[in-house]
Image (cartoon, rainbow, N blue to C red; front, top):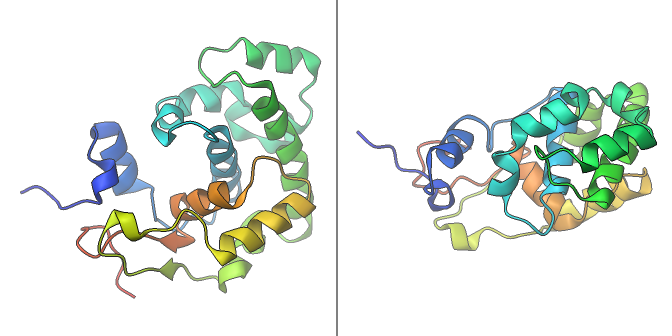
Amino acid sequence: MDKKRCTWCLKDKVYMDYHDNVWGVPEFDDARLFEFINLEGAQAGLSWYSILVRKEGYKNAFANWDAEQIARFNDKDIKRLLNDPGIIRNKLKVNATIVNAKAFLEIQSKEGFSNYLWDFVGGKPIINNWTAHSEIPATTELSQTISKDLKSRGFKFVGPTIVYAFMQAVGIVDDHVLSCWKRTEP
């Protein structure tokens, strides 16, 4: 029997697997959160699908998302990354990932990145009640607040729309429509 899913993921198996196993699932691991905030930033101006199919390429290019290693990347590393066909080769986005690694490590050392993010929602996901994908907003007041705070801490490519997509990806917000089999009951 086919499961009823959110309509945005019906394109192919890659999207359906992401929808079924990642999107909206609460993530508390600092390293995974760091990965997703950067992948969402890499998506700016592109489709999420274009990043999702390169997820392994990003993992390989960015030292398995080891923020300490990334924070030490130099001009030679940047040149390597800008020639890597496994990622989107945009200099601003590549540089942003390095900057973000430094900002991430700062937050992590003081309070833990997961604690920092989840404190915005009191440690529990926001579960919305959408009946159709068209109802889901691109930004919210909370994504604007988190975006502003991340920027004040040095993060790049973390505008309110990117932050909201990130919040959905890591389950800070659950935007599965009411008819979706993955919907969390409040």
